[in-house]
Length: 220
Image (cartoon, rainbow, N blue to C red; front, side):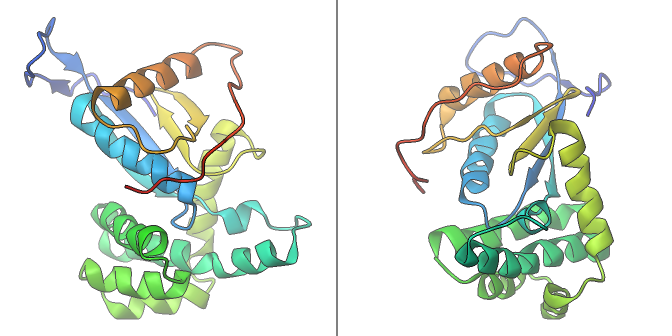
């Protein structure tokens, strides 16, 4: 993604500003079933409030990512079920426009991660929550939109490589996996994390900064 220099943020906050800031254009790839992508997406909602960034929401697929891999049986069964949400989101975007993607992701994700619903049930409920046609669920077990799904997924993989998962974020021509964070930072803490991620991702030759996780996703 590139910065659109024709779009300026001239709004003022409590803090003094040196002048109008150029708005960044970011793209966020998610799989609705991934709890870590969900945490990162909640962080991005905070970033939108305090940094001049516009976000496009796109689908990548853990089911596609794990095709052909030798997986434990229980995870293979999860991946088999993982096709339903992403297919329905892609079909909704195709048939009803870009603007439905984020609300549908929010609805499905809330049901999966907070409501602990099964993927298919969460997708059915998510369609109802945002007022989309119930018959979109027919795409859950159909390969009709798989070419679109795979193309969206591949755009993310082309930016960061296939040894990572979801989420992937692209901003101002730089892309990175993550951040993996829990709980989702809020307020200026969210802004500082955003600034740091964009900074290190823009350093030529920078690939990884990591430490072991000691907590699972903390939903709040």
